[in-house]
Length: 620
Image 1 (tube, one colour):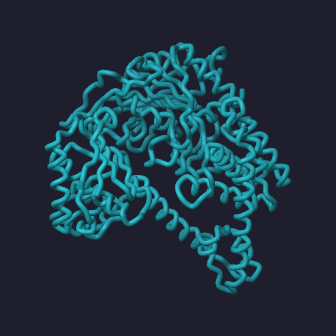
Image 2: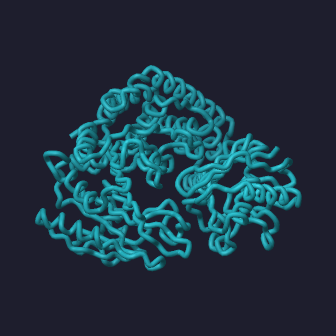
């Protein structure tokens, strides 16, 4: 069964069950400058899951093109990719668990309409409850799964795993249905139930795993279980049941209209039909893989080269779609990610001893592989080839420059500088240095690189979270004004107001915030007054690094749905012990509110989505 077969069978299956098949949204989100890429099937549908009516009805299905930049470093094993398709079906206030779980089970196991998978190799997880929020376990899903497996004459013992250790001493013990805590089997944009703000919706989910039968690695625990990291089990689908809304007193109520959000990895499902846990063995990679084998003189299965093959195969597939969507290699935003994919691929081609340009040839086959579903990639074949050839030639020139710099270093070789300045592979530096009798401490260099990458990721997360378009002087002013505005909104509208999104440019700021009704002219005037008073007070804006728990005790505001390390930075407007506002933030900011230079003015206040308002404001 091919990728196209699986995609078509899935969409046809749900179309027969009353779903409207909608096209994939673009890989670059439309009208959302706060995120670089579409990373899931749910992302384009959030407004409708929150209550807005969808023009195509309340039953939808699609295959969404998705990209997750945070997985770049994970690529190289048998199941991680940056670019993938997410099969999805949704119920917007229509059907619920009793329909969703049997349908997906039927799709997986039916040879006539679905994939014909062996039901005995399917294992499921459910929500086992959350003591802290007093959220009960999802026993309804357990009962549904028991019935489905029993109809196949499959034993379906239920195992309640430790909600913190996710397995521990309990392990498999012959189980088929496993319950986990909120960290594994609960969905909300804010995370676990206790982290959800009032008005946020969420609910339990139920995941399906395929057992590829690989031996358990006891490094990951004495016993194996579906969420074990040993690689035996691979998640192939997840049904999220958006069932609850959080009340202002911290309790939860049932939603009047409950939603279903299902996501299943197309490539992983296809791999399951072949009983092969290596997703790079599926048909869309075949032609590209053969090109690399021919050009390198090596086999994909040869010892020590498989990881390089996988990185090139993944990155060039993503690059092909990026360029077809209009992204070009650059030093910022999506262009930077594309450039990084290309340069990592060139380094891996070098490791395969491919010294001549090869990426355009590899990428060319993806247009053919996806011609039936995404013909625009094939239509852009000439542009894809030109962009990749140009970028590969440019980077190989960069590598040449790196060689020249290395030669000038004499007996003191700075591998870290060569990598960060020229993209020169650290391992290659070590080999050249060895010829001079110089030993490079690769462990130390990699440790330095990890620190550098951690700082880069932290900076990227801060940029993403803050929604800044750039770090121009006026943009930074608006970022600080944004902090003051949020506090002013809480003072006027109530403490339950929280940020739900932001976009800040050098021309204006925009904030989305939780509030259920239109602001009155008097409320807007009061908010403006508070902000302008803080500007006139010339309050210092101070960054402080502290433990996350200490920041939370201070009541520091944080980005909606974000996760933070143990040590965080917070910005306070005013001294921390008597601050006007305190927020988790990585900056940048002005050093004093007097630098905001102007009169703060709300130019527009409108609805953004159900329960969320939007303000656009300027300093004039």
